[in-house]
Length: 608
Image 1 (cartoon, one colour):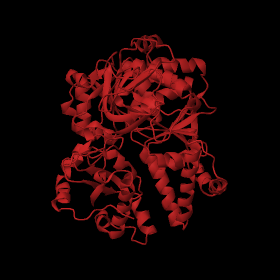
Image 2 (cartoon, one colour):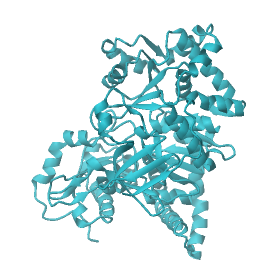
Image 3 (tube, rainbow, N blue to C red):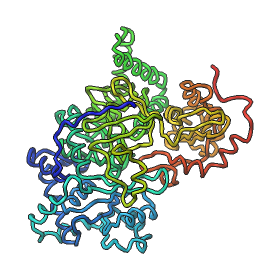
Image 4 (cartoon, rainbow, N blue to C red):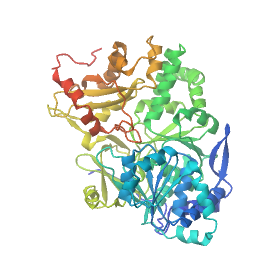
């Protein structure tokens, strides 16, 4: 059994809780800007000390409203400064947050609140309040609902003015490391969401050790980041706490359509993103170049960037001709892309799905080192991450300090250590099913190289076994196909079938630009585009490229382009944009059967 384990480099403190991260930061640098909030065309800084004052004032309001230590409070809101303010106010009041994705349906809100036993809920907008109101009768234990857009947080602050500072100090010290810090419900890509009990030690010990491991990222002069992925997800929540501990200035932009202007004004030094964001940046730049008649130049620049980075990674000498081309494209192409990201980005932390070596090398040549990592809600986000001092593109890095990973005989990744959750809330059967002693069975399949770098190869439950007995990991095919500009999502199918095929959706944001660049009507409907020969040929090219990396038995022989999109609203994607494979297979069973209804006499595999 392959196993890599790294001891913690920060001594554990079983008495510490999440509030200590802020207390220590304020003691160390009270006047350092810990946050920045939008202010006109710019940003207004909020110091560590001012943030703590606001946290305490809001915590007093929660106490005055009758919140007791250990009470659960639901929270539905977008990614803004107020998210972390509420998070720490709840900690300071001694309570427990139950974050709910702001895109959740009324039924999902009802389940999270009822299963957790939440006694109150904070919502951001009238829309969130309306969704909660739909299921209000199903959650009678929820005594109070506060709506941020109505000014209810200010009202809480005003009502809590009479609460003593000493009472807040008492409450914030009640929880020990082993106590529950938050109850996060899994996104439910398979079955009903389960509540993950994450302890204060999970956050505190992981944050303290990760700050040491990622010292170059979080301690560089003027370190700052702009969060735009949902803070309700453990990935951004962990980074928020890491930033407070390390003194990194954090801004927020909940509207991803405003991301580029926000990056331009905020100018972060590192980003936190999922691979789909990097794909969008690349594809948008390519299509913009194409529209301006410079597509050939962009593709040559991209090829040179990838080649240059690969040579460096392999420790090989970069040929003179490549150096010259790289210098030219650095001025014409790479510099403009760096400016589009604010001009100061040095690192980007990527997670939730494999990034792929192509994009990793491309951004590396732009001067942006993408530190790809791996983790789940159950591991408080990261279990492994590439480091600035120890990094390999195409892997998710070595294990973090305080974490151990081993591979079972079938390749399943198992994790133990400071980051592993305590249990599933009120679900001992589910808890027992995922633990082997103190090892958490992730359900993911992976491999280690000799230096301890982990590569994720797929999900254990998603492995397809064809009628011929061939085992196929869908991700190996799906990830490169999804990187094509016009592909929205793709699901590879073929379990117990004679060959592998795929369901493909189109990217409605990128499609009009691509159509215009290819001399087709930009306003073509998804239904017409799905049947269009040029569109089908482009998807075929993406599939041919993916097939080049696998054996013939694993290759995609047929595909269907669907005249619809898979979204979170349609129920086919999780809030972090992962596909709900089982739901898709059920909802599109007819389309799948149609693929296999006609025997394949020829293949879709390009022989050129």
